[in-house]
Image (cartoon, rainbow, N blue to C red; front, side, top):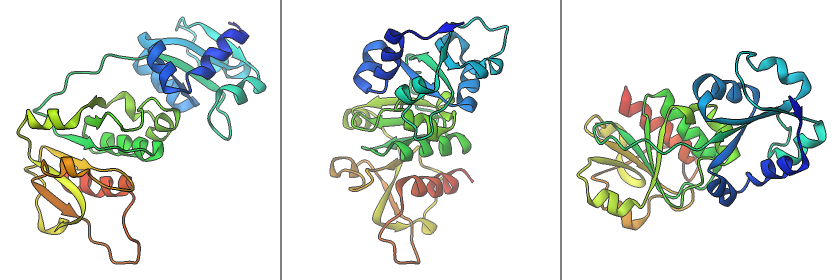
Length: 243
């Protein structure tokens, strides 16, 4: 247990940026609940724990981690949250698990909002969908806001970034796509689908990918809103798919 150095503090702050996370091959998780999940499930991946002195008691004494002590001022420097968390952990990135074509999966096309990405990951975990294929231009799964909104579900989901067109051309999947203009969801059966595809918040599924969706569906609304939030649409589709 030692006070964090200025150099290490700058390093932690630098991991807010994707280019630095890629370079260092690690990322920061913050918040008591998620950090304790990391300690429980992936202790071998932990590089550093950093926290306020009064949080030390939360760390299991039998675990031998390098623990750095932060001040309240330090928290404000390294946290992306409006109300900074008091417990941080630096995790080594894992090599993504191999894609299993025999398991159902989600396909995400250019999802940009970290909150949406995190919520979709959490919802997939709830419904037992443990693979997500993301286009290369999706928001980084190791973005702190994605990790926060996933509430630890990122630990249980295989998330792989791919160039979607070559990936889909090589395979013969039955894919349900979420569109504003498709067959009403209640008229379709999703049981035969291998995957559900969801598109960008503002533009939906890109034209280049539409051709791979052999079951285009829409979720009918009864009010005045123009469209559903993509994470809300994902929740409805996953419920229908897995019930």
